[in-house]
Length: 102
Image 1 (cartoon, rainbow, N blue to C red):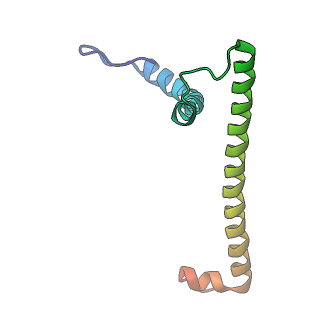
Image 2: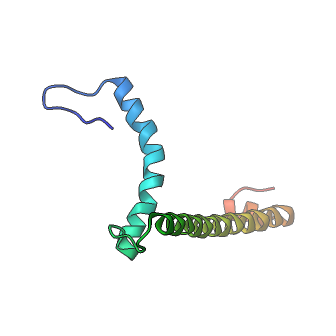
């Protein structure tokens, strides 16, 4: 990513490039940040590279599974709200909540 200098501003191309990079970069850095926060990520847990590679892979899988569950919870919650709103629309209650007449 590029930064402004004192005497020059970023061009439109550089700004677009930074935005594209940041959309991917935050996802990668999020997992590293969590490693540092919870597991002292600057140190290797095991003595061999292969064991550390497998450990990192399992951590990434666990992180993605946890994130997936959170996404499903949010989707389920919004789906329940939508179902309830459809029921209210059928019963005519939604219009009284909005303030319009059916």
